[in-house]
Length: 268
Image (cartoon, rainbow, N blue to C red; front, side):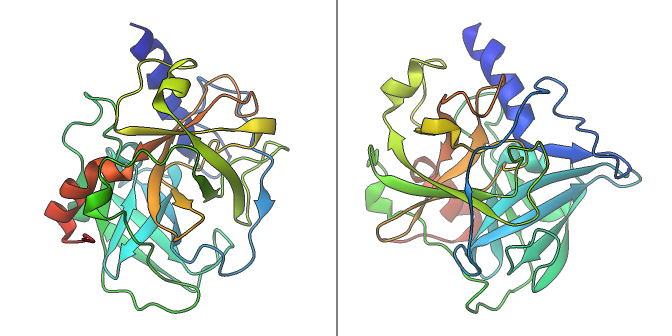
């Protein structure tokens, strides 16, 4: 029971939703005190692979905010809980301003691919969005996945970069992209805070309250050296983002075969 008592609220809090533009957090009722992260503003072009994802349902004004990562000219990788029950998404490319990218595309739900084992088996909070072809430039580009030979590399103590437009210290969503640099911890260490962490989950240390928070769901965790996408923002401690509790990500290396099966993207 510990797993369900802790994890389910956490999945809810990273997707940030508005109704009728009144900044009403339909998914944040369980965790009203979440605030960000003490990150730093990214310079233009720091993370050309990140996109802002604005999800909606037909006939409903509610807006759910997430992020994603470009992994190919026509594929974006994000969290399964972001695309769940949504009818379409507006994808903003190529700027650190959430609402003012170089361009945006609208993609319908028939182009969403959600891992079939989410949410029934933890560690599968991963989804794909098929997009029209997008040309790359200095502001819009892919991030490479781990090599297939790295499936079993746990990457413990590696430095990694997480970015997003989630909540800031003043409780407001960031208009300008914010980032943090921290180290990946072992699943054994992460289990001391949560539950028996499965291999499909990767955790990040968050000293000083530097962490992902509400609105950062689906965003990238990228290694510093030889940058590769190793994590997808998934969960955190429901009570607050600034407690120093680990930030939870879907481990990309655990899903390389699934990504290749549905998108054709793989590195050998």
